[in-house]
Length: 116
Length: 116
Picture 1: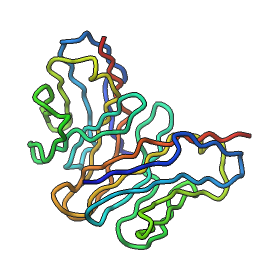
Picture 2 (picture 1 turned 60 degrees about the vertical axis):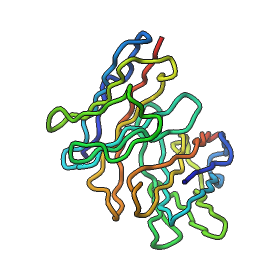
Picture 3 (picture 1 turned 45 degrees about the vertical axis):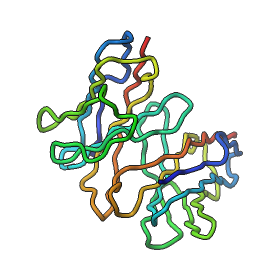
Picture 4 (picture 1 turned 120 degrees about the vertical axis):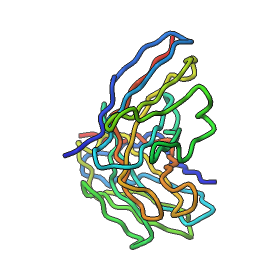
């Protein structure tokens, strides 16, 4: 069964460093998402991406964050200069379409980012 | 704006007992509602969804949920808990149409423990 994969499963970085979290969405899906969950808090929407551009982003998704689909398979989240408060579990998701008919979002297992 | 409240961050039941996980939502437009389950070291998996068809929705693993508009609730139930149901459960809401389709807003999660 197709699934969303994410690498690495755990990333440790120093404050101020750049990190790139990678996701491989399900191959025939067109919409891509990033969510994050800070320990003990809710899963929060960061950004949605369609047709090589951002569809929607939350107020969390500031200039330190960027997303890219560098090739036909990967979907990446870059944090330019990490802060301690960026430590969280980051989930990637994909869906066939969005629009006015609902389509299930399939989630990856997450990348745990620890900023020291 | 939308929000989801899950009553009880931890619920503990005995094997064979009724499972009831509570979810209340707030939404300015008709919502789609979801329950996701997360097993350790895995991604979020869709249990069931309400997308404005039948108000009683059946999902995987014997779970069901009832959409009650008057109570703004979407509680998750299972008549008889199994040890394998132990996991974290998330209620989520998505606006049905509009400019934010695709974006899920999650509750804070409920950890279900099942005792032998």
